[in-house]
Amino acid sequence: MTHFLRDILRQPKELRRTIDFLFAEGRPPLDAAAAAIRGARHVYLTGIGSSWHAALSAGTLFSLGASPVYMQDASELLEFAAFPPNSVVIIISRSGRSIEIVKLLARLRHSGTTVVAVTNSGEGPLAREAQIPIVVPVELDHAISVNTFSTLAATAGILASAVIGSLDATLAASLSAAIAETETAMADWQKQIADTTWFAPGAVTYFLARGCSMGSCHEARLLWEEGVKSAATAMGTGSFRHGPQEMVVPGARFGIWIDDERMRAQDFAVARDLRKLGACVMLIGQNLAQDAADLAFQLPDMPHNWQFLVDIIPAQLAAEKLARLSGVDSDSFRYCSFIVEDEFGLLPAERESPKQ
Image (cartoon, rainbow, N blue to C red; front, side, top):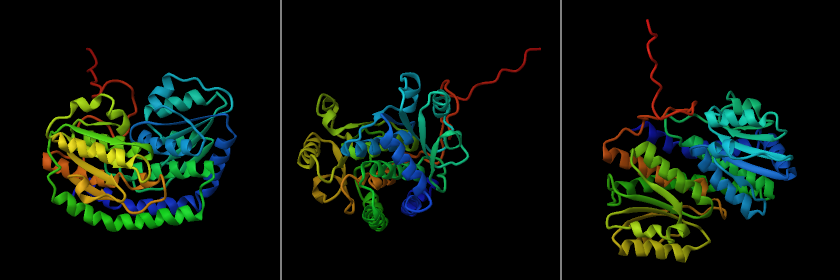
C-alpha cells in the first residue's frame, strides 16, 4: 500500500478529530477570529497550493452568508495588494513556512492588519506571528497534502459558518454523521475504482465544479500533477461552456462535481453531452443515478453547501489508482520540495565551488 493511500484512508479519523477540536479546546480562538472578522471593514482570505484550494470552498460559504471576502492566492496578494485600515487577513497554510506566507507576514506586521492563521503547525512563523492563530492538530501526510488539506478546508468552513451565524451543535452532529457514512462508503468507492474503464494514463483530463466544490475541483487538478505526474485542468462548469468545450475529443476524461441543490439538471446535461462526444465522465455528488456517468461516486447526505468536506476523497482515491496504473511514484516529488521556502526557479540551486 502506498503512503498516499494510507493517508487517504485515515482521513475520516482526522476530520472527526478536527471537528471535536474546534468545538472544544479550539473554540476560543475560533470565536475570537469570528468576532474579529465580523468587526472588520475589509476581509481577505488567502493561501498557497492546496491551502489556497481549501480557501476556495470557505470563500463560497462566506459569500452565501452575505459576508463576502476578497480572495487572492498568497503569491498574488503579496505583490499586488495594499491593505486599508481595519482589515483582517485570514491566512491558510499547512506549515506556515512557505515563502509567500513568510513574506506576506512581514508586509502585514506593521500595517495594523489583524492576521487570523488557520494552520496545522504551531511552530511555524504563521502561528507564531498571527494575532489569532487557529492551530489544527493533525498527523502530517507523507508527501501529498491529504489530511492537511481536508482539515484546513473543514476549519476554514467552520470559521465561515461561525462568522455568518450558522455554526451550532446541530451542524457539528450532522458533519460528524456524514463523516462516519463516508468512512463506510470508501470501501465501495475502492471497489468501483478497481472495476472501471474511466482510467486512461496520459489522457486529457478536465475537472469541473461549482460553488463550495470548486476547492475540491482545483485540488483534484493538483493531485493529478503531484501524484500522477500528469497535466490536468480545473475550472467552473459554467465557464467550461463558454469556449473550452471546443477541446473535447473522444477519450478525454472529465471529473464533474454535482452540487446537492444548484444547477443539477444543467450539469447532468453537460455530462450527458460529453459522453455523446466520446468523453468518459466521472461524477461526484449526492443522489446520483449510476448510469449518469462512466464512474459515479455517491456521497452521503450532507448539510447544504458542505459536501466539500468529503467530496475530494473519491478524487484522491482515483489519483492514487491512476498513479499506480501509470507506473509513477505518488509518494515522492521529482522537483517540488515539501515546503517551498524560496521564490526562484523550479530546481534546487546549484552551488558553485569556490574559485581557487
